[in-house]
Amino acid sequence: WRRRASRLRAAPRGGRLLDCCCGTGDLVFGLLRNDPTLEVTGLDFCAPMLQRAQQRAQHARGNATFVEGDVMAMPFENDAFDGATMGFSLRNVVDVDATLREILRVLRPGARFVSLDVTKAPNRTYKRLFDLYFYRIVPLLGGIVGGSRAAYAYLPNSLTHHPNAPDLRDRFARAGFTGAGYLPLMGGAIAVHYGTKGTNG
Image 1 (tube, rainbow, N blue to C red):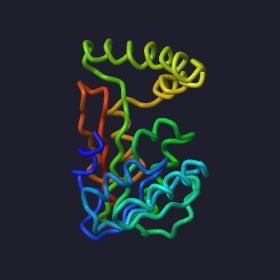
Image 2 (image 1 turned 180 degrees about the vertical axis):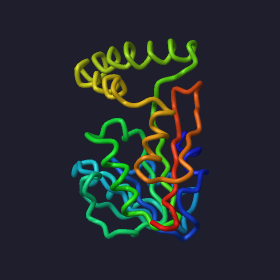
Image 3 (image 1 turned 90 degrees about the vertical axis):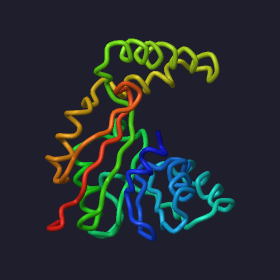
Image 4 (image 1 turned 90 degrees about the horizontal axis):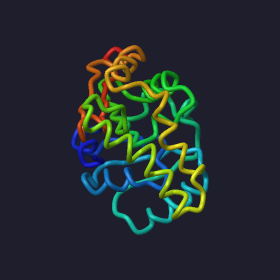
């Protein structure tokens, strides 16, 4: 799934790319493996995760930096990046629309934003299987392995009020992205959404 997002070319070779809600840097390092010429900045509000990402960066190839900050009020100038990505995080933000507008702000005209996340599968068979896994098995395994079922319940709960794939595409467009669309994966249980900042800003 992350490779699919990378192949959508969120940034040109040698470009400056932002990974929003980067966590410990999985997508950052994946992007750099695919294209070591990129300059990738990872942003996250969780300091312990960023510390782990910085430790990983010492043993990884490519140019990766990590910044602590809020994705809805990022510490970057307008038109700062040649592309942006987000992996499995957009459904967790407080305000999806505000987040999309803020990402648009920091992108240069012509730059693309690519978001990879779980979504509500339209295919009934996939939906039943995914719902069983996501809403029942994940919290159960969380209780067995992690000792707290409630701690893992946020994962399915985070999807409950998240827009479905077509609605999220429309919200990309309303935020100001041009050419907004999405690529469904796993019967529509996963989706890669994308949009471009217009050349007029």
